[in-house]
Image: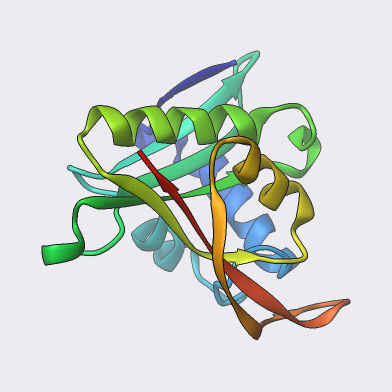
Length: 161
């Protein structure tokens, strides 16, 4: 698997992943009615941030975006988000994207990485992040409406470098 910076020609494949993940309403607090234009504006980071794609056998199977979590006095802490195509889940794509984002943030001089809204019922993601050094530092109770589990919490997770 190769992880490389996003190129404009990748958008159709990235949009398909973003669209499907958002419409599932299980892991991201984005509006499921998000348009393609809104998705592109939300997902594609501009420098100094970065959007990448994970490519396996010539097919884009995942994507990530990373950058500062906040501006100004909070700009020393990074953040990242990851999406994996449904047919590529469980194959280590998310793990590779997470490691890439962590390395990018460390190399860029950030002091840590914060995830602002990890759906607590997304057990695979929570375990993946914990394996990579993140800790749940708080949970907002019932802050996410899951389509089958009802209202579940959103974790705030942090990894200090």
